[in-house]
Length: 189
Image (cartoon, rainbow, N blue to C red; front, top):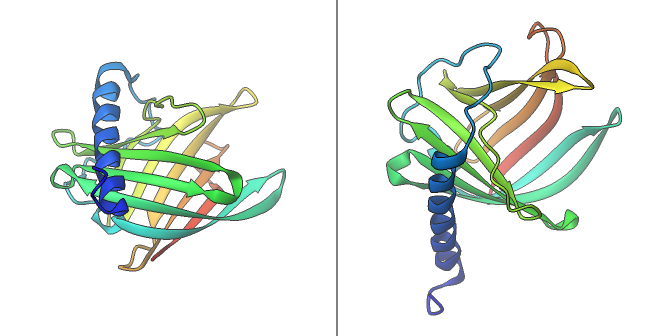
């Protein structure tokens, strides 16, 4: 691999890592928690093709009632005929990196989202499964905050050939309203 260009070497390593993550996830991951609203089973190969490529990302994350802003970048590859998407997220200013792995259960037509960060090296079970409806991807899962139930929603929207947005929103009223807590504005490099 030493003779390959750096980008091809990175892609090969990411694909190998994703394979290991997928094998580990299939054998050890706990089932996803029940979502407040069951996702519509509309997932299909290629749903995440829009995300393949290199990206600059503007983050806004709510912390202590104020928006914290910072820059990041990502490289994303689609593999296995569009049923897997591998994301390497990097936030240099925070000395942070992680890998997201999205896998489509072809039979159930639902996407699961796995995550591992470089600090722990521990694969998280998918908190939620979801899919795209009319160009918007939604993943909801139940969580607790200070002992009280909260619905966490992850959304992919505003998808164009050169940009997209992911955001996380929280609902403390059984899904009647959602308040954004993290917004990532993606711009293709």
